[in-house]
Length: 101
Image (cartoon, rainbow, N blue to C red):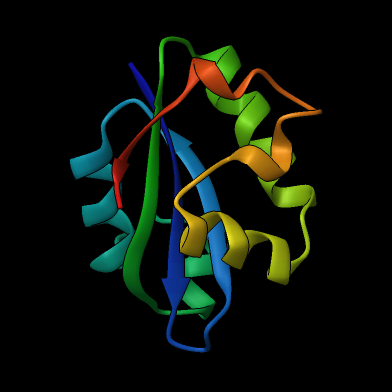
């Protein structure tokens, strides 16, 4: 399983990433270990907003790519509506399951 996730930072920005081990990756981001993303070093993570599960790395990467192309308002829509419907013309949203709501 692979996870695509959205983290809210203290400056209210949103960071999107993928991993195959969500607990380890969140530890790296929130504790700002040397393995955390460069972005989360400069923008301290505050809260995990959404996690989407997919069966493969390819699917997780596709979702990450599509989310990163969205505006902040569109990303907030995904978070607030608890849905990927905003992306249904770009990807098969049925390939993903939301596990953090």
